[in-house]
Image (cartoon, chains in turn orange, brown):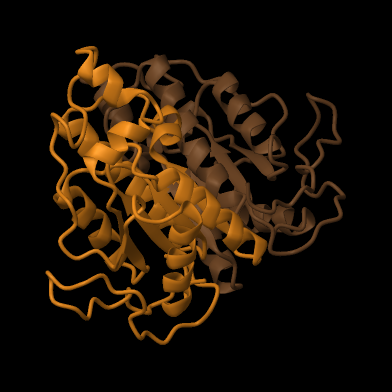
Length: 207
Length: 207
Protein backbone atom coordinates (compact mmCIF):
# COMPACT_ATOMS: atom_id res chain seq x y z
CA UNK A 1 0.00 0.00 0.00
CA UNK A 2 1.26 3.48 -0.77
CA UNK A 3 1.59 6.12 1.86
CA UNK A 4 -1.97 7.24 2.13
CA UNK A 5 -3.56 10.35 3.34
CA UNK A 6 -5.46 9.21 6.39
CA UNK A 7 -7.72 12.22 6.64
CA UNK A 8 -11.32 11.13 6.93
CA UNK A 9 -13.73 11.81 4.13
CA UNK A 10 -15.67 15.05 4.42
CA UNK A 11 -17.95 14.58 7.40
CA UNK A 12 -21.68 14.56 6.93
CA UNK A 13 -22.77 16.89 9.66
CA UNK A 14 -26.42 17.22 8.76
CA UNK A 15 -29.23 14.78 9.44
CA UNK A 16 -29.91 12.33 6.67
CA UNK A 17 -32.83 14.35 5.39
CA UNK A 18 -31.21 17.71 5.94
CA UNK A 19 -30.19 20.25 3.36
CA UNK A 20 -27.15 19.88 1.15
CA UNK A 21 -23.92 20.62 2.93
CA UNK A 22 -21.77 23.07 1.05
CA UNK A 23 -18.72 23.36 3.27
CA UNK A 24 -18.33 20.93 6.13
CA UNK A 25 -15.50 22.19 8.34
CA UNK A 26 -12.66 19.75 7.81
CA UNK A 27 -9.00 20.53 8.26
CA UNK A 28 -7.10 19.32 5.26
CA UNK A 29 -3.82 19.52 3.53
CA UNK A 30 -3.86 20.67 -0.08
CA UNK A 31 -3.21 18.47 -3.09
CA UNK A 32 -5.04 15.51 -1.65
CA UNK A 33 -6.60 13.05 -4.00
CA UNK A 34 -10.32 12.42 -3.85
CA UNK A 35 -13.16 10.95 -5.80
CA UNK A 36 -15.94 13.37 -6.68
CA UNK A 37 -18.84 11.13 -7.71
CA UNK A 38 -21.55 12.83 -9.76
CA UNK A 39 -24.73 10.78 -9.89
CA UNK A 40 -27.97 11.66 -11.62
CA UNK A 41 -30.30 10.87 -14.51
CA UNK A 42 -29.17 10.74 -18.14
CA UNK A 43 -28.83 14.31 -19.47
CA UNK A 44 -28.85 15.74 -15.93
CA UNK A 45 -25.63 17.61 -16.67
CA UNK A 46 -23.08 15.37 -14.93
CA UNK A 47 -20.51 15.21 -17.73
CA UNK A 48 -20.78 18.91 -18.54
CA UNK A 49 -20.16 19.84 -14.92
CA UNK A 50 -17.37 17.28 -14.51
CA UNK A 51 -15.50 18.41 -17.62
CA UNK A 52 -15.77 22.10 -16.78
CA UNK A 53 -14.75 21.53 -13.16
CA UNK A 54 -11.82 19.42 -14.36
CA UNK A 55 -10.63 22.22 -16.59
CA UNK A 56 -10.72 24.69 -13.74
CA UNK A 57 -8.88 22.33 -11.38
CA UNK A 58 -6.22 21.51 -13.96
CA UNK A 59 -5.68 25.16 -14.65
CA UNK A 60 -4.86 25.46 -10.95
CA UNK A 61 -2.24 22.76 -11.30
CA UNK A 62 -4.12 19.79 -9.87
CA UNK A 63 -3.84 16.32 -11.29
CA UNK A 64 -7.33 15.51 -12.51
CA UNK A 65 -8.99 12.64 -14.34
CA UNK A 66 -12.56 12.49 -15.56
CA UNK A 67 -14.14 9.06 -15.66
CA UNK A 68 -17.24 9.43 -17.77
CA UNK A 69 -19.73 6.61 -17.79
CA UNK A 70 -20.04 6.53 -21.55
CA UNK A 71 -16.34 6.54 -22.35
CA UNK A 72 -15.46 4.17 -19.53
CA UNK A 73 -17.83 1.63 -21.00
CA UNK A 74 -15.67 1.40 -24.08
CA UNK A 75 -12.43 0.99 -22.14
CA UNK A 76 -13.22 -0.99 -19.04
CA UNK A 77 -16.75 -2.24 -19.35
CA UNK A 78 -17.34 -3.18 -22.97
CA UNK A 79 -18.83 -6.45 -21.79
CA UNK A 80 -21.51 -4.84 -19.65
CA UNK A 81 -25.10 -4.03 -20.51
CA UNK A 82 -27.78 -2.24 -18.54
CA UNK A 83 -29.24 -4.93 -16.32
CA UNK A 84 -29.11 -4.21 -12.60
CA UNK A 85 -26.19 -6.64 -12.21
CA UNK A 86 -24.30 -5.06 -15.10
CA UNK A 87 -24.97 -1.54 -13.88
CA UNK A 88 -23.68 -2.50 -10.44
CA UNK A 89 -20.55 -4.11 -11.90
CA UNK A 90 -20.01 -1.01 -14.04
CA UNK A 91 -20.15 1.19 -10.94
CA UNK A 92 -17.91 -1.19 -9.01
CA UNK A 93 -15.20 -1.15 -11.69
CA UNK A 94 -15.32 2.61 -12.15
CA UNK A 95 -15.24 3.02 -8.38
CA UNK A 96 -12.21 0.77 -8.10
CA UNK A 97 -10.27 2.69 -10.75
CA UNK A 98 -11.29 6.01 -9.19
CA UNK A 99 -10.04 4.76 -5.84
CA UNK A 100 -6.69 3.71 -7.31
CA UNK A 101 -6.25 7.17 -8.78
CA UNK A 102 -7.59 9.13 -5.80
CA UNK A 103 -5.39 7.39 -3.27
CA UNK A 104 -2.45 8.46 -5.39
CA UNK A 105 -3.24 12.14 -5.20
CA UNK A 106 -5.49 12.51 -8.23
CA UNK A 107 -8.77 14.40 -8.14
CA UNK A 108 -11.13 12.06 -9.95
CA UNK A 109 -14.39 13.41 -11.30
CA UNK A 110 -16.76 10.57 -12.03
CA UNK A 111 -19.86 11.21 -14.12
CA UNK A 112 -22.02 8.13 -14.22
CA UNK A 113 -25.76 7.56 -13.71
CA UNK A 114 -25.05 4.97 -10.98
CA UNK A 115 -28.73 4.48 -10.17
CA UNK A 116 -28.44 2.09 -7.22
CA UNK A 117 -27.64 3.38 -3.74
CA UNK A 118 -26.08 0.11 -2.67
CA UNK A 119 -23.49 0.16 -5.44
CA UNK A 120 -22.59 3.77 -4.63
CA UNK A 121 -22.29 2.87 -0.95
CA UNK A 122 -19.92 0.05 -1.83
CA UNK A 123 -17.68 2.47 -3.70
CA UNK A 124 -17.73 4.81 -0.71
CA UNK A 125 -16.78 1.89 1.54
CA UNK A 126 -13.84 0.95 -0.70
CA UNK A 127 -12.55 4.50 -0.42
CA UNK A 128 -13.06 4.52 3.34
CA UNK A 129 -10.93 1.40 3.65
CA UNK A 130 -7.88 3.49 2.80
CA UNK A 131 -9.04 6.83 4.17
CA UNK A 132 -9.40 8.22 0.67
CA UNK A 133 -11.90 11.07 0.43
CA UNK A 134 -15.11 10.25 -1.42
CA UNK A 135 -17.69 12.92 -2.12
CA UNK A 136 -21.13 12.10 -3.51
CA UNK A 137 -22.66 14.86 -5.61
CA UNK A 138 -26.26 14.52 -6.72
CA UNK A 139 -27.07 16.39 -9.91
CA UNK A 140 -30.77 16.74 -9.25
CA UNK A 141 -32.17 17.67 -12.67
CA UNK A 142 -35.59 15.96 -12.80
CA UNK A 143 -36.77 13.57 -15.49
CA UNK A 144 -38.92 16.11 -17.32
CA UNK A 145 -36.04 18.51 -17.84
CA UNK A 146 -33.64 15.70 -18.73
CA UNK A 147 -36.17 14.45 -21.29
CA UNK A 148 -36.36 17.88 -22.87
CA UNK A 149 -32.55 18.18 -23.03
CA UNK A 150 -32.12 14.58 -24.23
CA UNK A 151 -28.47 15.08 -25.16
CA UNK A 152 -28.08 11.59 -26.54
CA UNK A 153 -31.60 11.02 -27.82
CA UNK A 154 -32.27 8.30 -25.26
CA UNK A 155 -35.56 9.74 -24.04
CA UNK A 156 -36.87 10.03 -27.61
CA UNK A 157 -35.86 6.46 -28.31
CA UNK A 158 -37.57 5.28 -25.15
CA UNK A 159 -40.76 7.13 -26.11
CA UNK A 160 -40.57 5.58 -29.57
CA UNK A 161 -40.33 2.14 -28.03
CA UNK A 162 -36.81 1.60 -29.37
CA UNK A 163 -35.19 1.42 -25.95
CA UNK A 164 -36.16 0.01 -22.59
CA UNK A 165 -34.66 0.41 -19.14
CA UNK A 166 -34.05 4.14 -19.22
CA UNK A 167 -33.12 5.32 -15.75
CA UNK A 168 -35.78 7.56 -14.26
CA UNK A 169 -38.38 6.56 -16.84
CA UNK A 170 -38.81 2.81 -16.89
CA UNK A 171 -35.79 1.85 -14.78
CA UNK A 172 -35.14 2.80 -11.15
CA UNK A 173 -33.09 5.71 -9.87
CA UNK A 174 -32.38 5.67 -6.17
CA UNK A 175 -31.58 9.27 -5.30
CA UNK A 176 -28.88 9.74 -2.66
CA UNK A 177 -30.42 10.28 0.76
CA UNK A 178 -27.52 12.32 2.06
CA UNK A 179 -25.08 13.38 -0.63
CA UNK A 180 -22.27 15.72 0.38
CA UNK A 181 -23.59 18.16 -2.23
CA UNK A 182 -26.66 18.64 -4.40
CA UNK A 183 -26.47 20.54 -7.66
CA UNK A 184 -29.85 21.66 -9.05
CA UNK A 185 -28.56 21.86 -12.61
CA UNK A 186 -32.06 22.61 -13.92
CA UNK A 187 -32.30 25.80 -11.85
CA UNK A 188 -28.92 27.32 -12.57
CA UNK A 189 -26.37 27.55 -15.35
CA UNK A 190 -23.66 24.96 -15.75
CA UNK A 191 -21.16 27.63 -14.77
CA UNK A 192 -23.06 28.18 -11.53
CA UNK A 193 -23.04 24.45 -10.79
CA UNK A 194 -19.30 24.31 -11.44
CA UNK A 195 -18.77 27.31 -9.18
CA UNK A 196 -20.82 25.67 -6.45
CA UNK A 197 -18.88 22.42 -6.78
CA UNK A 198 -15.56 24.22 -6.78
CA UNK A 199 -16.51 26.21 -3.70
CA UNK A 200 -17.49 23.01 -1.90
CA UNK A 201 -14.22 21.31 -2.87
CA UNK A 202 -12.30 24.32 -1.64
CA UNK A 203 -14.19 24.19 1.64
CA UNK A 204 -13.25 20.56 2.05
CA UNK A 205 -9.62 21.31 1.28
CA UNK A 206 -9.73 19.34 -1.93
CA UNK A 207 -9.35 22.18 -4.43
CA UNK B 1 -6.29 15.88 -20.59
CA UNK B 2 -4.04 16.61 -17.62
CA UNK B 3 -0.70 18.28 -17.99
CA UNK B 4 1.40 15.37 -19.10
CA UNK B 5 5.05 14.69 -19.06
CA UNK B 6 6.00 14.63 -22.71
CA UNK B 7 9.32 12.91 -22.25
CA UNK B 8 9.61 9.97 -24.64
CA UNK B 9 9.68 6.45 -23.30
CA UNK B 10 13.11 5.03 -22.58
CA UNK B 11 14.83 4.58 -25.92
CA UNK B 12 15.68 1.14 -27.16
CA UNK B 13 19.25 1.61 -28.26
CA UNK B 14 20.19 -1.99 -28.93
CA UNK B 15 19.36 -4.09 -31.95
CA UNK B 16 16.21 -6.15 -31.67
CA UNK B 17 18.11 -9.31 -30.90
CA UNK B 18 20.72 -7.64 -28.76
CA UNK B 19 21.38 -8.06 -25.07
CA UNK B 20 19.15 -6.64 -22.36
CA UNK B 21 19.53 -2.91 -21.90
CA UNK B 22 20.22 -1.96 -18.33
CA UNK B 23 20.55 1.79 -18.50
CA UNK B 24 19.77 3.54 -21.73
CA UNK B 25 21.02 7.10 -21.46
CA UNK B 26 17.89 9.24 -21.21
CA UNK B 27 17.71 12.61 -19.56
CA UNK B 28 14.74 12.68 -17.26
CA UNK B 29 13.17 14.57 -14.45
CA UNK B 30 12.51 12.69 -11.23
CA UNK B 31 9.07 11.75 -9.89
CA UNK B 32 7.71 10.90 -13.30
CA UNK B 33 4.99 8.32 -13.57
CA UNK B 34 5.60 5.22 -15.65
CA UNK B 35 4.30 1.76 -16.28
CA UNK B 36 6.75 -1.04 -15.59
CA UNK B 37 5.23 -4.05 -17.33
CA UNK B 38 6.54 -7.43 -16.14
CA UNK B 39 5.65 -10.22 -18.54
CA UNK B 40 6.55 -13.88 -18.26
CA UNK B 41 5.26 -17.38 -17.62
CA UNK B 42 3.21 -18.34 -14.57
CA UNK B 43 5.54 -18.72 -11.55
CA UNK B 44 8.33 -16.86 -13.37
CA UNK B 45 8.67 -14.49 -10.41
CA UNK B 46 6.82 -11.44 -11.73
CA UNK B 47 4.70 -10.73 -8.66
CA UNK B 48 7.55 -11.33 -6.24
CA UNK B 49 9.78 -8.91 -8.08
CA UNK B 50 7.00 -6.34 -8.50
CA UNK B 51 6.04 -6.37 -4.83
CA UNK B 52 9.62 -6.14 -3.60
CA UNK B 53 10.47 -3.37 -6.06
CA UNK B 54 7.30 -1.53 -5.02
CA UNK B 55 8.35 -1.65 -1.39
CA UNK B 56 11.72 -0.20 -2.19
CA UNK B 57 10.27 2.59 -4.33
CA UNK B 58 7.64 3.47 -1.72
CA UNK B 59 10.31 3.60 0.96
CA UNK B 60 11.96 6.24 -1.20
CA UNK B 61 8.75 8.26 -1.23
CA UNK B 62 7.41 7.39 -4.66
CA UNK B 63 3.73 6.83 -5.34
CA UNK B 64 3.50 3.23 -6.44
CA UNK B 65 0.74 0.83 -7.38
CA UNK B 66 1.09 -2.85 -8.15
CA UNK B 67 -1.43 -4.28 -10.59
CA UNK B 68 -1.16 -8.02 -10.24
CA UNK B 69 -2.85 -10.17 -12.85
CA UNK B 70 -4.51 -12.42 -10.30
CA UNK B 71 -5.93 -9.70 -8.07
CA UNK B 72 -6.93 -7.49 -10.99
CA UNK B 73 -9.05 -10.31 -12.33
CA UNK B 74 -11.24 -10.12 -9.24
CA UNK B 75 -11.64 -6.34 -9.43
CA UNK B 76 -11.72 -5.38 -13.07
CA UNK B 77 -11.90 -8.54 -15.08
CA UNK B 78 -14.15 -10.98 -13.22
CA UNK B 79 -15.97 -11.66 -16.48
CA UNK B 80 -12.88 -12.78 -18.35
CA UNK B 81 -11.54 -16.27 -18.89
CA UNK B 82 -8.38 -17.48 -20.55
CA UNK B 83 -9.24 -17.59 -24.23
CA UNK B 84 -7.04 -15.50 -26.47
CA UNK B 85 -9.73 -12.83 -26.75
CA UNK B 86 -10.23 -12.74 -22.99
CA UNK B 87 -6.50 -12.62 -22.28
CA UNK B 88 -6.15 -9.73 -24.71
CA UNK B 89 -9.08 -7.86 -23.13
CA UNK B 90 -7.56 -8.51 -19.70
CA UNK B 91 -4.26 -6.97 -20.84
CA UNK B 92 -6.06 -4.07 -22.50
CA UNK B 93 -7.99 -3.17 -19.33
CA UNK B 94 -4.97 -3.49 -17.06
CA UNK B 95 -2.98 -1.43 -19.54
CA UNK B 96 -5.65 1.27 -19.59
CA UNK B 97 -5.74 1.53 -15.81
CA UNK B 98 -1.94 1.52 -15.62
CA UNK B 99 -1.87 4.33 -18.16
CA UNK B 100 -4.38 6.40 -16.17
CA UNK B 101 -2.21 6.03 -13.08
CA UNK B 102 1.15 6.47 -14.79
CA UNK B 103 0.18 9.67 -16.57
CA UNK B 104 -0.70 11.05 -13.16
CA UNK B 105 2.74 10.53 -11.70
CA UNK B 106 2.35 7.03 -10.31
CA UNK B 107 4.93 4.30 -10.82
CA UNK B 108 2.81 1.32 -11.80
CA UNK B 109 4.29 -2.15 -11.54
CA UNK B 110 2.22 -4.58 -13.58
CA UNK B 111 2.73 -8.30 -13.09
CA UNK B 112 0.70 -10.24 -15.61
CA UNK B 113 1.51 -13.13 -17.94
CA UNK B 114 0.33 -11.13 -20.97
CA UNK B 115 1.33 -13.81 -23.45
CA UNK B 116 0.53 -12.03 -26.72
CA UNK B 117 2.97 -9.51 -28.19
CA UNK B 118 0.21 -7.66 -30.01
CA UNK B 119 -1.71 -6.90 -26.83
CA UNK B 120 1.45 -5.69 -25.10
CA UNK B 121 2.24 -3.50 -28.12
CA UNK B 122 -1.24 -1.98 -27.92
CA UNK B 123 -0.66 -1.03 -24.30
CA UNK B 124 2.67 0.51 -25.25
CA UNK B 125 0.93 2.47 -27.99
CA UNK B 126 -1.71 3.79 -25.58
CA UNK B 127 1.07 5.07 -23.33
CA UNK B 128 2.91 6.61 -26.27
CA UNK B 129 -0.22 8.55 -27.20
CA UNK B 130 0.30 10.72 -24.12
CA UNK B 131 4.08 10.49 -23.86
CA UNK B 132 3.80 8.34 -20.74
CA UNK B 133 6.84 6.12 -20.17
CA UNK B 134 6.22 2.41 -20.69
CA UNK B 135 8.92 -0.13 -19.90
CA UNK B 136 8.58 -3.78 -20.85
CA UNK B 137 10.43 -6.18 -18.56
CA UNK B 138 10.67 -9.81 -19.54
CA UNK B 139 11.07 -12.17 -16.59
CA UNK B 140 12.72 -14.96 -18.53
CA UNK B 141 12.40 -17.94 -16.18
CA UNK B 142 11.87 -20.93 -18.49
CA UNK B 143 8.95 -23.36 -18.36
CA UNK B 144 10.91 -26.15 -16.64
CA UNK B 145 11.90 -23.94 -13.71
CA UNK B 146 8.42 -22.40 -13.48
CA UNK B 147 6.93 -25.90 -13.42
CA UNK B 148 9.20 -26.87 -10.55
CA UNK B 149 8.30 -23.73 -8.58
CA UNK B 150 4.59 -24.02 -9.45
CA UNK B 151 3.56 -21.41 -6.89
CA UNK B 152 -0.15 -21.83 -7.56
CA UNK B 153 -0.18 -25.50 -8.49
CA UNK B 154 -1.14 -24.73 -12.08
CA UNK B 155 1.56 -26.87 -13.66
CA UNK B 156 0.58 -29.87 -11.51
CA UNK B 157 -3.06 -29.42 -12.45
CA UNK B 158 -2.14 -29.21 -16.12
CA UNK B 159 -0.10 -32.41 -15.86
CA UNK B 160 -3.01 -34.09 -14.09
CA UNK B 161 -5.32 -33.12 -16.94
CA UNK B 162 -7.38 -30.83 -14.68
CA UNK B 163 -6.47 -27.65 -16.54
CA UNK B 164 -5.88 -26.72 -20.14
CA UNK B 165 -4.42 -23.64 -21.76
CA UNK B 166 -1.47 -23.10 -19.43
CA UNK B 167 0.81 -20.48 -20.91
CA UNK B 168 4.14 -21.93 -21.97
CA UNK B 169 2.88 -25.51 -21.79
CA UNK B 170 -0.21 -25.92 -23.94
CA UNK B 171 -0.94 -22.26 -24.64
CA UNK B 172 1.31 -19.78 -26.49
CA UNK B 173 3.76 -17.36 -24.95
CA UNK B 174 5.16 -14.79 -27.34
CA UNK B 175 8.38 -13.63 -25.69
CA UNK B 176 9.20 -9.94 -26.17
CA UNK B 177 11.62 -9.46 -29.04
CA UNK B 178 13.12 -6.28 -27.61
CA UNK B 179 12.10 -5.62 -24.01
CA UNK B 180 13.72 -2.69 -22.27
CA UNK B 181 15.01 -5.15 -19.67
CA UNK B 182 15.31 -8.89 -19.21
CA UNK B 183 15.43 -10.43 -15.76
CA UNK B 184 16.72 -14.03 -15.65
CA UNK B 185 14.93 -14.80 -12.40
CA UNK B 186 15.99 -18.47 -12.60
CA UNK B 187 19.67 -17.56 -12.53
CA UNK B 188 19.68 -15.05 -9.70
CA UNK B 189 17.91 -14.33 -6.43
CA UNK B 190 14.75 -12.26 -6.31
CA UNK B 191 16.75 -9.60 -4.51
CA UNK B 192 19.21 -9.50 -7.40
CA UNK B 193 16.36 -9.14 -9.89
CA UNK B 194 14.89 -6.30 -7.83
CA UNK B 195 18.29 -4.62 -7.65
CA UNK B 196 18.70 -4.95 -11.40
CA UNK B 197 15.24 -3.50 -12.03
CA UNK B 198 15.81 -0.66 -9.59
CA UNK B 199 19.16 0.18 -11.18
CA UNK B 200 17.53 0.26 -14.61
CA UNK B 201 14.72 2.51 -13.37
CA UNK B 202 17.28 4.79 -11.81
CA UNK B 203 19.18 4.92 -15.07
CA UNK B 204 16.01 5.91 -16.88
CA UNK B 205 15.28 8.61 -14.34
CA UNK B 206 12.19 6.79 -13.12
CA UNK B 207 13.37 5.84 -9.61
